[in-house]
Length: 315
Image 1 (cartoon, rainbow, N blue to C red):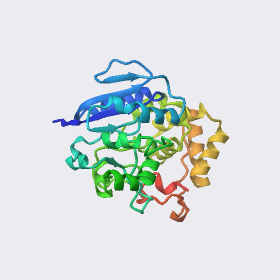
Image 2 (cartoon, one colour):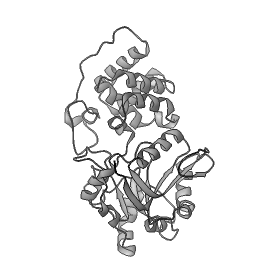
Image 3 (cartoon, rainbow, N blue to C red):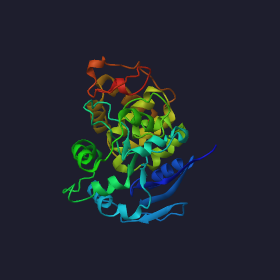
Image 4 (cartoon, rainbow, N blue to C red):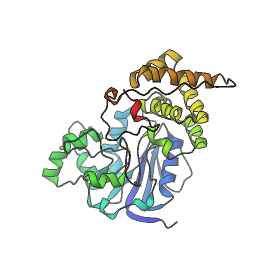
């Protein structure tokens, strides 16, 4: 496979919790692309074909944001930065489009936004260093808030008017990445813990279940991916993922978390099967899936796949 040559871009990841998985995300992204530079900001020394910046483990997201604003620009020597995370990386190098570099910011669209301020997600995103410097300026961002929502919805109009910062339109974002809406064509990358099943086989998901950080196990995205594997009846990764969650929560707390996200009949049947799997019984009773009407869906995702995907079962 011929690699895509991207000398204008630094591939970059920042993570001190999911270190192994984030390194793998970098390696995935390197398979089909040659970048101008590669930087991994982390807390563990590693022998790897990229620069490693060693920092103390981040205690919270505020510390991560502070690093982005105050220190990251000094490590970037190319006009653009491609940010990846443990749950978002390059999946189709051949889907790279030179037009991506015509914009200062490209990320997956937020499908539930329809006001022109819906691009977008930063978990897998392309950003110009010019934007990074503008975003990190105390004059433009006095609170030094470093979230995609704040950038792409609050700061965007000012940045477009005063600095001619260009945010990609939805049509370009759809070629670049996907997150909370199903892609219509192969995209360059993706983001979302709940999308990992699309890009990892069962054995890889078993490893992810063992290596993923504790805080991630308690996130809504982790619950979604458990439900997804139940819907697909893939019991080996389902057992591994659920067992990891049960290490952190008792059954009743898990059930409450599922009921908050899904209709109660579906939540209870999923938990019942998962508990049976943990008991290593000879046979697992599989009740029929209970799918609520679409009016029960809380978040208005753009597309619904009723053939066993996760979105129809969300409250």
